Structure formats: C-alpha cells, structure tokens
Length: 409
Length: 141
Image 1 (cartoon, rainbow over the protein chains, first blue to last red):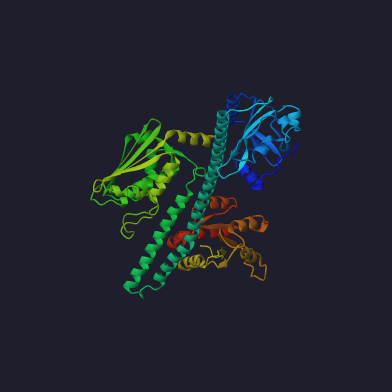
Image 2 (cartoon, chains in turn green, blue):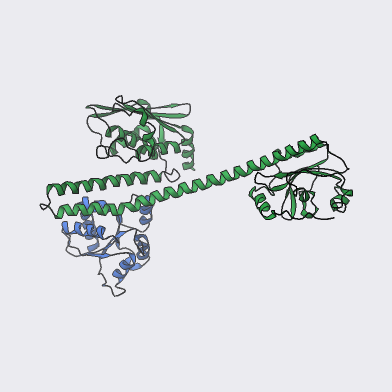
C-alpha cells in the first residue's frame, strides 16, 4: 500500500477548500441527489462527494457507505486529485500495487472498483472528487464517465454558489457595519461642529453689541450676513443630526391619531395667515407612530409653506387606509416642481433655489424618504410647474402593529 | 432680595461659553461672585481648596458643562454626590444638545435643572431670574 504524495499546491489547495466553509456541515439534498444519480448511472453501490482535507477525506454526500470520513492515507481520492482534469479509474484494486494492501480493499467496504472525477474549482484547485465505488471489479462506459464528469461539475457549481452566498452575507454585514459607522460619524461630527459655530454666532453678536454706533452700515450688513450663515449652518447641522439619528429601535414609538399629530405640527410651524391648512375627516381615526412621522409631516408641510408663491395658499392633507396600507397625501397650490427634478429633490443636499432666496438644508426630503423607507413604505411626488405639488407616502399598517406590541411587552 | 452672597462656580472648558455666562451676569447686574473652573478636576480643587487653590466658601451653586477634558460634568456630579459635604449642593447642568441620553444621565444626580447655552445669550434675563430664585433658596435654607 502507498499513500498518495501531496499535490504541489497543497497549501493553497487546503486554503481554497476552507474558503468554501463546507467541511463538517450537515448533509444537503442537492449533494445527496448527485451521489444517488452517480450510483444509478454507473450501477455501483457506493458514491461519494469526497473532500480531501489535510489528514482526512470528508464526505459531503454519500450513498451506500456509513462512514463520514476516512484517513487521507487510505483515500483513493488523494490519488485522483493529482490529475485534476482527468477521471481517475481503478478497475480492480487488488491488482493495483497502490491499493492492493489498502485496508479499505482488504477489509470493509472491500473496494474493488473506483472511479473519481476531481472537483476542480475555477481557480484550479482539486478539492476532492465525485467518486463511485463497487465491491466487484468493473469498467465504465465512456458515456458513464462523461456523466460522472458532468455531475462533478455540478458539485463544483453548488460549492461555488455556497461560497458566493457566504461572501454576500459577509459583504452585507460589512455594509451594515460601515453604514452604522458613517451614521455615527455624521452624528458626532455634526454635534462637534455646532459648538465652534455657536461661538462664532455669539462672538459676532457681542461684536455688534460692543461696537454699537461705531460700525458703518456696510459693516453691520456684513455682520448680519455672518449671522445668517451661522444660523443656516446650525439648521444644516440640526437636520444632519436628525437624519443620522433615525433609528427606530431607540425612538419610543408613541401611537397617536393623525389629526393630533397635525395639530402638533401646526404648533411647531409658523403658518402664515395667507395659508390655510385643510385636513380630511378620515384623519381622526388613523393611528400612527408619533415620532418619526412628526418629522415627515413637519418637513412636507414646511416645504409647502416655504416655497409658496401666491396670495392665497392652501395645503390639503388627506389619509386613507387600504389593503393594509396607510396612504397619506399632502397637496399644495404652490409653484410646483418640474418633472425633471422629481428624483433629484429626494437626494441629499439638493436644493432647487439659491439658499439666499429660500433657506433649505437639502436634507428635509431625504429625511422623509429615509423615515418612510424604514417604515417599509414609499414616498412619491406628483407635480408640474405652475400646478402645485402633491406628495404621497404609503407604508404598511402591519409593521406599526408589531412596534406597538413590542412596546407593550 | 437676598443680600447674602452665593458663590457660583461655573465649570466650563469653552472660553466663549464662559464669557457668555459672565456677560449675562454683568448685564443682569448679578451681585453673586462668579468663579470659573475649566473642567471637573479643577472644579473639585476649587471647592475643596486643594492643589494650592483658593477654597470657594459656601454656599455654592454650580453650573456644570457636560463635555469637558479630564473630568466630564457627569463624572464631577458623581464625585460630589458621593461626598456628604456636597451631597445637597445646588447644581445646574449646561446643555447644548437636545440629547436625551445626556440629560437622563445628569438627572440621576439630583440636579436642580438644565440651562440651555443658547438661552444664556438670547434669553439671559429668564436664565438669571431662575438662578437668582435658587440663590435665595441656597442663602436661606
């Protein structure tokens, strides 16, 4: 008996094998079916998906054999992987000096015939074989060998899929992690940026106070501009903080009726006299989580007010419940938004007018979108230039109930 | 009005924020002496007269910032509340953020309230009034 020598690329080969994370995993139907098919096609009692590990061969799938693994020195497959692109066939092991004294030949399972097709990965590593075994000497027809090769390719495909899905999962985890880091960063950065900014605002105020009567109108104008800019940056940082803080797990989701919520929004916003806010009857009965929907309404309504350009303004809020979804619309008779900007307005930091004309951080609508998306819903706009805008958002009722019960427990 | 002085110790690392408080005191003509420590460590030394510092006489009223180098406002509160001498010392916390977490942590240390830093400039009269009311309590326990 002689054990097979190690392949030249053994170290890399083992590393590749570990990359599939398949060793010692439970049996799977997809692999089991392949070995059954191999035995059916070849008329042999035993078939295996054997992976050649450092000191053993381990069977991902097996039919006709109880053992989960054997020592590598006994493995026919260790020989087979030396010819990664060719099937390895032993017609009668008792007549082959390499195997005649192998204890798997001299004792159970009394191997006589062996045919193994290497499992060759796309990057050229033979991980093991798809092999079929008999206890009597035999020969395989060419078509049987061909079928065995195809089945071996299928095993490799399964392994590749497995690897891809593992990589995808790892990538998704990394992505979540780095998103979290980014949000934390935005949170900390906007927080830390506020304190020097506040100092600038305060110092300019003192400058103005202490130099009263000494400043030229131009100087005063410039100081005013500094203060406008610091106010704007404060607003920007506040919005950025809000945006990065959206995390429903931390937000206590108090459930309120929409009408109560709108009343609260009215209190927070300065609604000018020439603008009327109309709400629909149906709002009475609909219950929604107060935070974060307060922010959604506040942003959409304040946008409608901010951009309004007519003598008489009208904002209509309506709501309905349909097929387990809530539908809300907020319509105004303002200037409207040309269709080519409809996607853009939901992007971060995008504004359609110079900030000196209309104050805006460009975070309001992205924030709305983020909140609604987190609720499992969608937000859209229907608007034409000169014809007002209607913002619609929907989200499933179910998720709210889960939150509700979560809080109750 | 109270005539007995209450020694107000401002614990704040930012010079501009500290000056804002000073200005508000001057504008409102507050008679109580105002001391300043730049962090929690310095505040403790000034209260106790350690490390060659002048020991600020009682009664005390503390205005404490949260984020500071060496010893934060929360750590300072935790220190003074663990000592019988300062267990009942009146303390306000200076806040900037609306961070609920910071406020909640401060609340655990029996503070008298929060002073919003942005109000110190714009709404200083209210802030000073509130502090004056408390100084009366401290002066006549």
